[in-house]
Amino acid sequence: MVNVVVIYDSRTGATEKMAKAVAEGASSVKGVEVELNKVGTRFDVCLIDLAVAVILGSPTHYGSVTLEMRALLESLNDLKNLKKINFSGKIGGVFGSYGWDGGWVVDKLVADMKGLGISVVEPKVSAADKGGGFGVRIGEEDLKKCRELGRAVAEKVSKRA
Image (cartoon, rainbow, N blue to C red; front, side):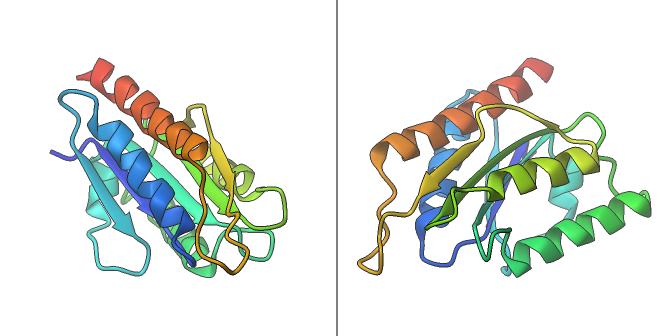
């Protein structure tokens, strides 16, 4: 059974790199099964219902999450309102990348997750994509923080088992 679902969107590859580090950190906790999914690819939303934890990541797009991530969040909110998914008691985590705006996207994700009833754990990770048109450059320190985020969420999941 998948305990932790990591769902992300990525434009330049920066957030994808972060998502893989988050999944790696979560997978390092014994007994925790992790699934990594990119918004826009086909995956069963039931995974979110069955999982103990959900970790979301998005690049900043005009000061907010991407349109695709916004659509997912709206769908999740609809499923909650229809009582198709119960988010109460779920553990959450957030991460995001940004180019110029200071990384406010993680605060947006935290607010949306709390609105669903998910208990969000720290550390939330916001990292600057220093690529500047010359490729993705998420630093090793940022990736370390992503692995720590994944591990922190997974450790909370393992304590419930």
